[in-house]
Image 1: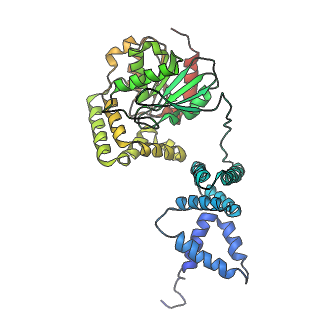
Image 2: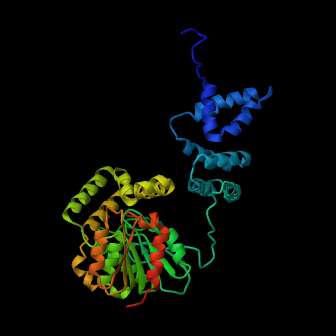
Length: 410
């Protein structure tokens, strides 16, 4: 091949230019490079080769981490023009606003509150311009979420919100998640009811307690949370593991409950499922949460939802990876051992059962079996939901909850 026909070879400037475009966008890069003149051309060449190729091109950190580091550093130096440029580029480049929020909160500690105040003000403007600003979250008494821990042991983290009137409502989350699973629906229900959410032991901000854990332990935890709150009897909403706890409450502590909502749950598992639970426990004890996180996400939310809601999937996976592996394995063994089936006839409070048509973990026939054994229970099957129905079908889930709350009292 003659020199005239050889393809051009990229040099360090070209490589840096690609990174610069990927991070800051074509318009800004064109403005900086095409508009260079005799005075600043060497500088533009230098930073494109050195900063954007030598540094941004290093394999040690991914681009999202580098973007967040730049925001923290420019915030600390009060380099607001640079901060605004990189913040806008980060959001346009797909960095979730939640990660930027966490970076600015960290900066409030290490850079100071005045710097954080300016950074939040600039970022709020950018989020508004880009159509990404989250909805209102006023800190008025009837809206603000208060976080506490139980006095009794192991200490459990609880979140309180809502108006003083109305039937008190308690939300109990699924295995491996935490009380934030209920954020949106709790905020909606809190407009008309006092609401409590809590983290199961070994999850979120709750303690673990000594030894292994059983479903009975989780039921007793829920009973003491309700009694410490002092607002019982309550309407109890449990999904998956939370629903198993709700069944136990209704059987063993009927004085705690006025109503019961059982979502995507079961009263017992067949032998084949027991083997699957044992395999999951072994995987977690040997490989940690990363060994099962992707599998759990796939069981919690179905493929079309995962494809169209990557932000929800990302947060779900991150929550699972934060979970203590030992506590998760213990909770798996507790869930695998659930067996309320022969006692469901003792449930006397008005009960709503909800199932997801696409749920492979607690399929509709499990929900149907619950509704048939609990006196007077109603069953609703959401056609577009798998296991984490409150995330996949939030509006439909909320409608069923509101109908259940308005229903007649036994």
